[in-house]
Length: 87
Image 1 (tube, helix red, strand yellow):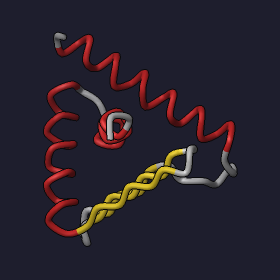
Image 2 (cartoon, one colour):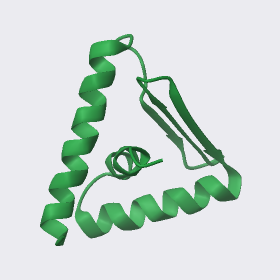
Image 3 (cartoon, rainbow, N blue to C red):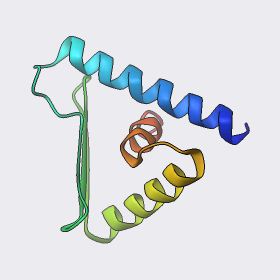
Image 4 (cartoon, one colour):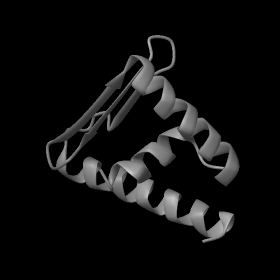
């Protein structure tokens, strides 16, 4: 898969996750919450799946997300939503 195809796949997955959350969860529900300072990453999907990373684990994940985001020209949030579908 080339970079352009990967960008499309990431954006499609992230959009689908957000639309599903919007449909089945409260309107102020936050699917992904990132704090670069502490650091932590929290992802809550509509099927009551929760993923929470903090400390070194979150730092490593955020570094991967930023690197991939730059490579594929997507946001780190979209990248994280994309890869979370395979966890």
